[in-house]
Image (cartoon, rainbow, N blue to C red; front, side, top):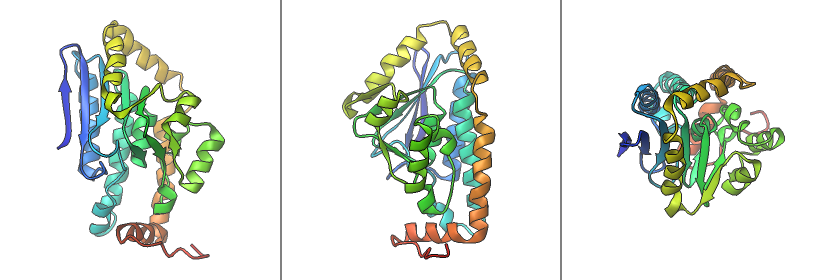
Amino acid sequence: MGNSIKVHSNGIAEIVMDNPPVNALTVAGWYEVAQLVTDAGRNPEVRVVVLRAEGRGFNAGVDIKEMQKTEGFTALLGANRGCYEAFKAVYECLVPVIAVVNGFCVGGGIGLVGNADIIIASDDAVFGLPEVDRGALGAATHLARMVPQHKMRAMVYTAENATAQELHAFGSVLEVVPRAELRDAAMKVADKIAAKSTKVMRAAKQALNGIDPIDVNRSYRYEQGFTYELNLDGVADEARDAFVEKRDAGFGAKK
């Protein structure tokens, strides 16, 4: 268990997140994913990265229990920076990254997937940002790469999920397949990329990033500033305590 990497003989680097029960990553886990993705891209033998997960779902975001057990803002700052580094690593990986989504992809998972080059999902996959229910903001930058503007805003405000089928209709998910066929479907796409010139693919990745209309790294850091403000205000801490204690947050009319 944990986060691991295997480089196959055909140049496919398979990075697997396996952190029961729901693949919510600790601060160290986010940094580890960032390093695995970065190292894979820098490896001249790697032609494409497949980022997937074992277990119930792809990713449930940050480990809120770790955050609430840590005094002060150390874990909050660590999670913010760790997520930033992991999302950035996927976006700036020197080779294409295929995100393979099973089950749920929420919170920080949206940052990973939204910054990937290709998304393949199981037919039971859902995507969402429950951040407002946790007293936080973030990864709307990445969700906006996956759904239209007004859909993104509705998802942020309501914290409701979108299905893989919806995202496929938007064109952001390449394929939707039964969960049992998910890894094979991803590997077929990865095989096609790995069979091409790695020099051309690496140049293509750089070129496509260069023509992006939004600086995703700067945009996400802007969002994180509001999360920190909400923490200083106290509303975020109450939201996280309520989540850990499995109760409704006491926001009331003033919060």
